[in-house]
Picture 1 (cartoon, rainbow, N blue to C red):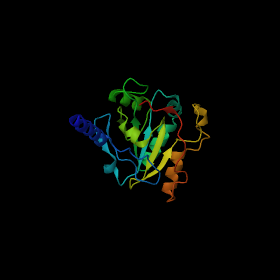
Picture 2: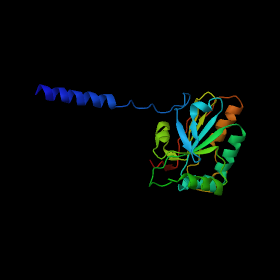
Picture 3: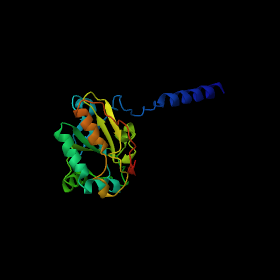
Picture 4: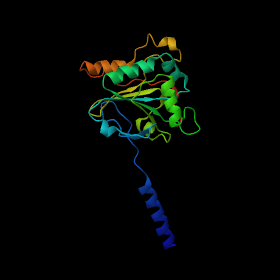
Length: 203
């Protein structure tokens, strides 16, 4: 009986030790969650190594109608080019799990980039959802802006028109563009958090 009690105690202790503390949710104004990811060419991207330059993260799923709205209208490509021309590193992140909508191979991701004339700095493949979950990415698109010091300065939707209609792009307030404009003018980001919209990330 005593031996069984010791075994049970050991199992309980091992279980407690194996429990990992929950990762804090990302918060605007605080350091962005660290991550390391691999792009379609097999290159490793580490947020810590990008310190000194601003970064934009875009969660994407090419089969999502909300994503199609922004790519078929050319809105996302224009924003990518504006950002990279301004010195941002733009990382498109695909967190769709194998067998789920939006999951692609590296070659398929590259073909999508080429066929849509997209202009990210790189496309990160996150099939295990590690980066996505660390950022609490919920939708495609879901956007994050990180400053040169690694501080998360914007998180949320791409704009204020949560529809799938490409005609709504023209009259929308683009929150990512607004954040970039605030930063370029030396102002705090006026809308650091907004509600993301789109398809759920297919973890």
